[in-house]
Amino acid sequence: MFRHDEREKREATKEHSNFHIDKSQTFRNYSLIGRTYKERCDMYDEAIQSAISVAASKVETYVPKKGKNAGKTMQRKKSKLRKDAVTGLNLYVPVPIDLPYSEYYRWFKAVHDIEVEFFGAENVIDSDVHYDEIHEYFDTWLKEWVMSRVHMHTTVVPRTADGRLCCNEIFTRENCIKLNNLIEEMTQREFGIAFNTGEEPHRESVERLKSKSYVAEMKLFEELQAKKERLCAEMSEYNEQKEKLITEVSELNASKAIACDEIIRLNAQVSNMQTQVSDMQVQISDNNEKLEKQHTEINECEKQVEKLSAEVAKLNATKDEAEQTAAAALNEVNRLSEQVGNLQTQALKMQLQISDNNETLNEQDEEIIKRKKHIAGLDVQISDRKNELEELVDDIVECQKHLVFLNNKKESDREEIAYLNEIKKRLTNDIDELNKTEEEQINKINDLNKEINEKRMKLQSTTAEVRTQKANEAAKNVNKNYMDERANKAHDILRGL
Image 1: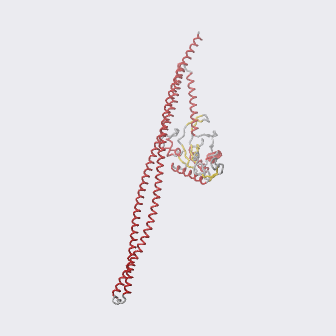
Image 2: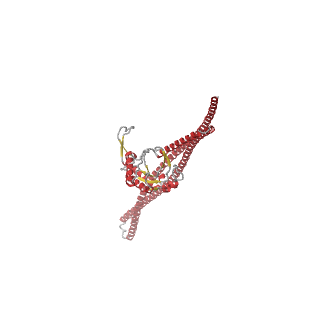
């Protein structure tokens, strides 16, 4: 409907399904709000999403008839619209018959203001005035030919005051009468003419009314054709025979036209089926593209798994090096402890020698002093070695912490690898489902091709039967007319005798 109402989209359309649209007059159409096609679509989408949000925020009670909760009063939230929900109304308002052309814009603007106030500005998408649909048609109520009028289309989203989407509460008989009375009062008050024409209200769709008008036009045409045939029948005998042959030919042409229409209809069905087949082929190609994307995602996941495996190998190598460093540090600690024990034993031996050699103590004072200095140097070395041992112990503690960190990282990497494997399995399952879907679509295409061939065969047989039947009827009519003519002549001859 947005494409039908909006002027730019209307001008861009090459061929309209409504053959009454005069594209040379489309430039005169205008919008009273001025929203573009995209702005209308965005406003419509926002209104529908808002109605869905309002419905989802409310809780409704219901009583299930089946299941374990059958007969109990339950509550639920609506998270989506019903399949048969009416999401938009298109109001058709023609200009009054007696309104001057110069007042058209002011009258349409006043009607638009009434509609905005009646339905709410947030629910009125736009109002478009059309000058390019003026044509002559047969009114089935007046039983005469009339000219259509300039009219306005207003698109409305049927939302209630609390934001719910409910056409049954908005588009009621009372509201239609109220809106019609508001327009009537405004027209009489500001323009001094009547909006209502006293015609019977049309409670059918525009397409249905157009089809009725077309049927009435065809009936009127057939009546005129019958009158013409009756006048031609009053001519001479030769002209009567000629007209009979012409009517028979016209009947054959009508049957031929019916058969041609049937062929066109069946060809349209065939073309529709072919478009469905092409759409299915496009869908199959889209599915193939999805399969290729999923294959690429699987390859990327496998590459990530390989990278993580390489990092795990590096971490294992780093762990081995740290363990080797810790073992070397422990060996060094053991060696230094052995040296400390040896030095302590040497000090004990020296003290025993000093106690045993008290007599030679004075002579060996210098040697003792030297020994003491050597022991002091050894004590310094021992303290240095102790500091080194403490540093090594700290390094061992850091290595152990690093090993714990590496083990934790290894566990997390294992979990991530398991997660990636699970994703790989899911993608594989999706690929299998897509393959099944593709096979089903191929089967559907084959079924459609079979149905098309069957319909073609039926069409050929039907056309052949129709042609033979019409030819037989025409031959019977010719023979009957000829025999009637001979009988009439014989009767006239008998009367003359």
